[in-house]
Image (cartoon, rainbow, N blue to C red):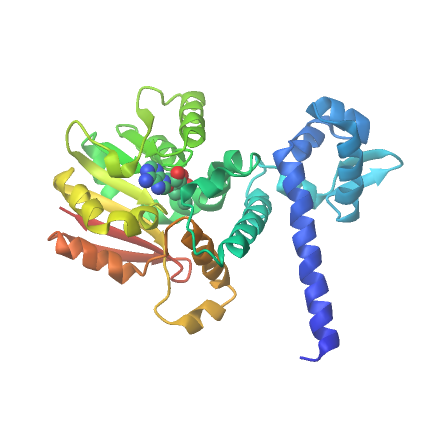
Length: 338
Ligand SMILES: C[S@@+](CC[C@H](N)C(=O)[O-])C[C@H]1O[C@@H](n2cnc3c(N)ncnc32)[C@H](O)[C@@H]1O
């Protein structure tokens, strides 16, 4: 590729990043949602309806118009199709892309600053940007909820069995609790307990469970997986994108805990992004982002796992596993039975 075409390629990529940055402001400020509700509005009227500063909103409207999120008729703006698609409650919303883009920029800046010292600050880096943490759970819910509901859940035997017996499901590292809500909608006998380290996530999880009428069946607690004690063993323990967060700290301790806190016949269901065995697989455009995720996981004290490592860790506990792969091998669900 010659230098002119490289320049063109990078200009396009830079515009893509700018576009997602502008979308992020619209998502987190509620501007797409408010304009959808209003139908059409001037920038000052939009600012007032959203409870935001008119000076910023005027500039945002120009930028969102430039990047085709908004249409303009004189000084009146309305949502273009891309703006509609960025609304967090739009079907198949593009919101996760905007949140992920700014989260990645934050992580890139942190990695750049940590290169020399080698410090790994841990989970708290997620909370360093006030506007990011509240969107972390919704980003994951919008990114993975429907994949779970439509593809992953129907493929595994564990959930239906748990429901038939009215068992309790424990979700370790539950984020905003979307996984238990999906299960509670599908399986009417199922009860759930979610644990997460961030207050923000637990507050959202409780609020969303309440608004869907699941207060009686779903509970959420703030706490550390490493210090968590159950009153009695449970029948299904799920960890979605959470195992790699605790693996480096105490792998053996976690797997012993999973074994000891399951009733005989109970299931551990672990969903993880699958780190490929060969580096060359990272060049696949569908897998590239994993390499950046692994770098930002490093900041948090984590690394992404190969499914085989998880299978081996369960085998050490005498637990048999079955591995299910989804999205062209990028997502792995490991089901282990005690
Ligand atoms: C990538 S998120 C996944 C969240 C959720 N399971 C989902 O699929 O949307 C990992 C979650 O694990 C939680 N977590 C990480 N380490 C933890 C720990 N030691 N104790 C409790 N929660 C933890 C984080 O707060 C975060 O919400």
